[in-house]
Length: 232
Image (cartoon, rainbow, N blue to C red; front, side, top):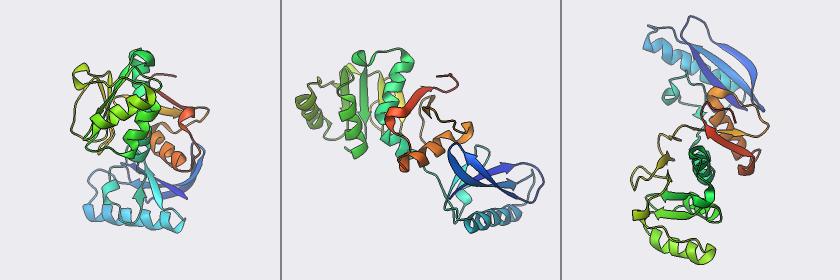
């Protein structure tokens, strides 16, 4: 069972309710934390929230934007969206090209990482048939780029040529064009992802998508990338 934690800055005793997060049934706990609440009271309320959700079979929780205490949870695990975004590096890069009005066949994408990883190589092989050029900015990247050129016929793009979009799997490396930070504190550069035919809660859409992705309920072919705030 999935849980959700929300926080209200007003007086109250905590409230449990069954809700739906898009297509997922969930159990929501409302934490009341008015301004000036003593820290020991906050800790006690957090422990109660965890006990109540665990008692209803919750293991992982979706955190609303107003819930600022995720790092203080001890028994529940917040949903991690990073594996989703790293797995969708190619989809996000193509979405950035779309947002800039650059046809894929004319666009160049850089994939940057501290090492060659499965997410990078997967994204590279999916992008090769679509884009004009691919820049691999990682140790061993030149050899891997030559492998891609031999397999797909895609020209090796040197760093000097630059790129329109960089999907970064680590904080270092080159910076070309629109940069997608797919590590640590993820930054999609203003992009938002939605699933075709699926109504997702706006303030936790990424977390719900991450759960659906894990369950195989959504596939990359059914995802839409757009600028946040723009109607697809």
